[in-house]
Length: 281
Image (cartoon, rainbow, N blue to C red; front, side, top):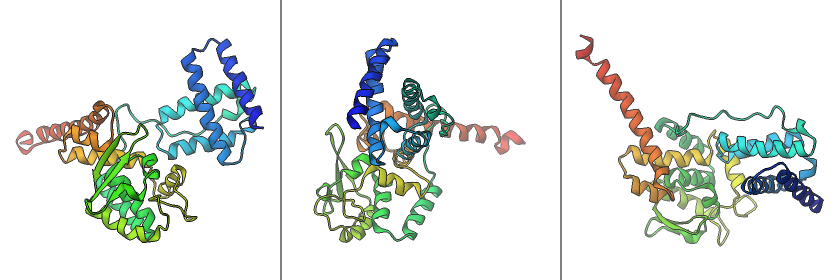
């Protein structure tokens, strides 16, 4: 069956070429289809037999991972074109997707929302989940980076965490007192020699399992990462420092958090200047 799926993908790519698609577009379609196929295999399904329900669940999975509505719409476009090639256009009809937010607008948790989230997590008395939420919120690391952490990445004497990015870049992030406290509470429950965060079956946590856990609290890892960056900017931390802590390759990515802060300050200043006592008298 897998060979049949691979052959179908190859035929689909040839069809795209005949349709006049560029080599870059064809390459993108190939990559996204392979990701979809890999996800299907985790649910014991095959690309050749996809249904409307499979497409819907995949989009929900991407949303849980923190993928933007714009990205998900593009991925759905790839699947829609593939469905057209299979002569099964109905499998991409009526797919529900989250609406996109305005350009440059960043979804973050407010301080009360952060407090509420942390309170709910601690009430469940799951030391691992509590440590994971604090790790994401107090270090801003990506969910892929969190799942790849080993115990050796932690230095509890120096109170710091070493993170290796997907491009093998290393950055060191100081541990907050609260994060260290919850890590110390969790570590005795982890019998694994290497992986820092493990499942109930004592296997390394997967991105999907982390996002599934976070979904119970109405958040995703990307939102926690955004919150980490925004809170640092709001406290006056420089763009350079925030960029290095977050592992941003381009400081322009970091600047959008500063822009968000500037806009909010401008709004507040406009209200104060317009509706001050002197103005109203």
